[in-house]
Length: 382
Image 1 (cartoon, rainbow, N blue to C red):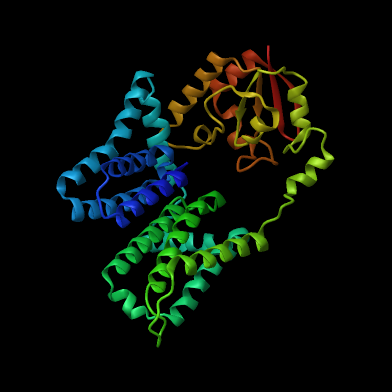
Image 2: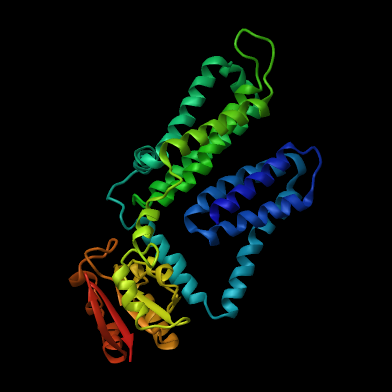
């Protein structure tokens, strides 16, 4: 969702940039789209701020202070709308503790002491180029830019105010992306999705700026659209061909598994044996795949309980909320997924429900354990 909102925002900004006439609707839509980004993923907020900053500069320069004010106002409306709905549903405390306080703590929890901004950027840069499945995309894009610079008049490009502004915007977006990726100091591959967005913008900005000017020693210009589109298309196809497959690994597992592909088929079978369609599942640990593997409905609002297991300012509030969801929804299955095979949380002495007396008491009172499969404990409600 944040990538979609950023892409829509960039598209609306490009319309404003290339249009000779003001369309107020586009100004209001741009502000509203950017205003939703912090609520889609807090990590993407700095990227939304960069797009909003350059949008405000453009609107102010072309259309004056009043339109800039309307742009800012439209950016605030999503926050007002969401907070009013949240307040009406009694969820402001959850919004504050679970979304804001927890995520800000989560973003800095793994940071080493005395870390600098440059450390964040270097860490993120390493993530882009050390992940084999995506490194070829960034490598091919960098090579394309370097080759283009060899044939075009770079000095003339940098002297052009329009080209310079676009390139500065793209570089600012890219550097901010590195910060967003590197700030949590976690090597999670899905963070790299932000890299695809900003790298494509940077690559396109540089190539378009170069192709607007004559080749060195010649007087003719190149059609920008005809030149840039094939380059970008080639890079995408090359990256896909080299690093991705039309026959994903999970198809191999699915062929051997009557349940289709599941992470732990025996655990899934144990849950199926004690449930019927429509029953609910509550999970303890970080193994949300069991929701999709079983098609059981979520019995709590937590797809994983990392925020309850790990020490953080909202831990007590989140535990109370979790137990409240169990009492209210009464899920048929409680899966204690603290196992050596599980992601991140494998040591029951450190992360098991026994470390949380109120939760342990609730489970002992209301559930019976029916299976213990490689550390995954399946409980059925009494």
